[in-house]
Image (cartoon, rainbow, N blue to C red; front, side, top):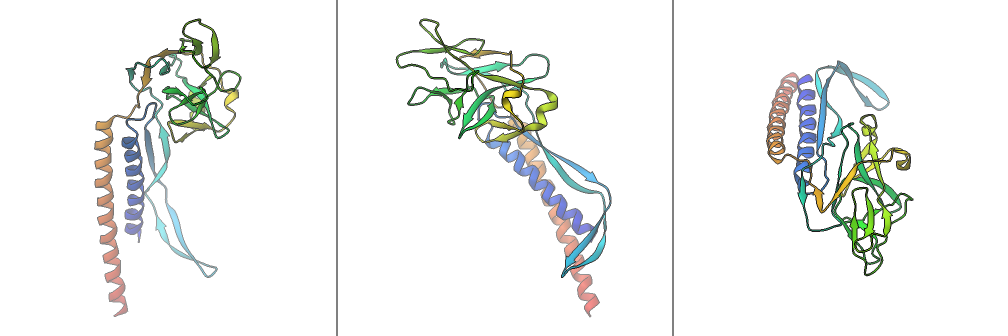
Length: 256
């Protein structure tokens, strides 16, 4: 039976790795996207039981099985590209190891994002391309009056490009190394935070306009890792089927 468990758990782990690499590849062209890594471990000996009709029957012990611990998101900055839009910005992290994010709102919930590709909606509110609204230091949306050409300075202030009048300051918060486990990845290159975003430290990092931060996905590495995970799945599948045939043969011989 132990061989069955080894093959089955190996297949599950390999499939999770395949899904993770496939998602990274699918989002390689998403600005501000951060790639994921599936972490696995080998756990100690356990006992297996079958629960049937209220009875608990001992099946056997199994050990040295691979299980997935969870996904870790790498927050390393992606490469920067130049654009022609004054509403495209990137944030430059300080060397203290903390990571800065823009604070946005969607469906009355606050999120964090590194995707600085902004636009104005029909009401001239500043938002991301995925529809999340940029919040200012007072948790309000930033509105650019009609006829005004906006620009964003290095402090994250949205100003009238002609007069320099302040229209709003983009709210930015930073995540420390210890706080990273509290981030949960959401769609649209956004993160939710297990806590109150407005209690996170205010970021003092500078921003640069007419630039965008690309994803930090290494396509070559992801393709290689994806193929290796597929090979691992196939190997575990063969092992599973081989043990299944052996057990089936033994069972039939016992019946005879």
